[in-house]
Picture 1: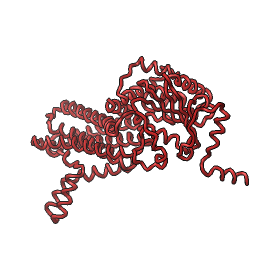
Picture 2: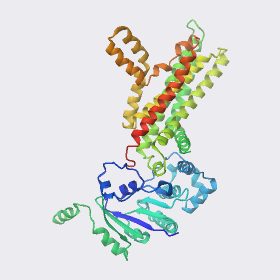
Picture 3: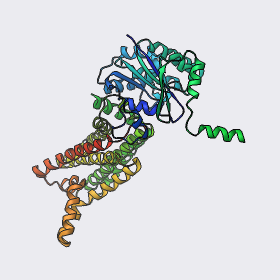
Length: 217
Length: 255
């Protein structure tokens, strides 16, 4: 299957997470969110065909990993066997034994991997990942990064991130947002440095004056 | 299928909550406390025991409903538990119904447990197990579920704590609607009577569920009234959740 990975870049508050929520259809058409006016051409995706990994582990901490699987499978109106769960957990590098423990006992990296495994239920064509690499230690970062590179082979990925090196490794297409406006759409630049230059070309509005004031002090 | 999955997950999560365990211990404590009334005799043997059991079970079932409702709704907002489910094709109605059913099923479970305790106790004391007495416990369950639905409905446009507070206030008001209607019919002008009648039919009327005087005095209850008080909470809950879902679906998710 021909797949591609789209990376969403932009400063804090540029609208990356909002765009992901827009992809998920979380806003009504008549929503008064100011960014939505600039994205009239971007349509929400078909929820039947996508899996979503949120920025934070918004999971019920009282439930075990296995129960999270059962809940998510139920929400996607499909059945999941213990073998399917074991297969998905192994695919994301999570210990199968962890499935019988409540999520409150999981580390951040484990939660992140569980979220990816949950998103993979029903084998969606598209995976939406909102800052999947933030807040991880170098070990966790490495594990999630190699998982994403493996997923890239057979899924369309849409990832928002601030990690420019990782973005360059993963990207086929780059979108840059600045204050809610999609200011750049194009293929991955030739090098990570070129991507970095592209990123810094679009600071948040008001950042220039902040820089100037800082240099005067 | 999404509703069943949500119901199951909600009930499991609530059962593992420390506060639920505390409530369960409290219920045992109340039941044991009611047994102290065994030795008191106020003309009719064990009348005080029956009265205390009914009152404490009414209080406990509503306490369960309110705390379960608060816990579920607080988690929804504090831990943003709705974000991931809504990335699927889940509708607002299924979400609300699933979360409500998870909490309501535990309230029903507690009600059945109380019924079992009452049956065993009455059998041991050789009190005739009068059906209206048992029906009263079931009506307390219905009342607690309706109160839970009111809190869920209010949470669709209020913050969780306000929803809980207004929910409890509406339960108190709803409890006195029968007396209020009686009072205004006798003493107030037609305009006030119409206003009170509006309250009587529009607000959740919890006074319908109180048949304790018939239960304790072993008086039968008419079939029409029985049918009415059993269908009333079902219809009211469905309407509340439906309007709540319509309001909820207008909100942006994940902010």
